[in-house]
Image (cartoon, rainbow, N blue to C red; front, side, top):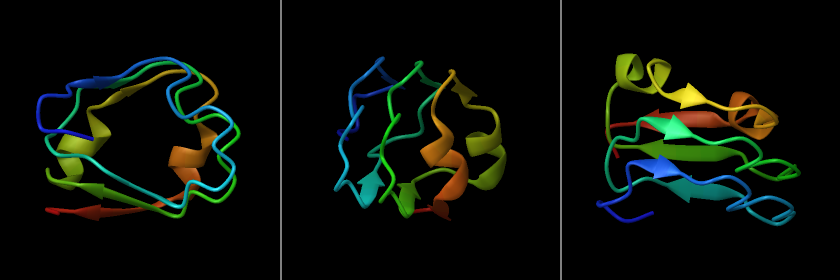
Length: 75
């Protein structure tokens, strides 16, 4: 996602069954509900911030794929 993105809108990647990785161009502040629902293959998230930044992101309902994926910081 580009560097101008500060939040991920609802349903953006919903039902992207083959999505394996996502890379954020800048630290985000929110992931809206269902943005990553039904993304069973998501295994890595590349996040440019640090772990504390990631923990501060407000994550909406039905984004379990984010909890199961490995987050790589500083990328």
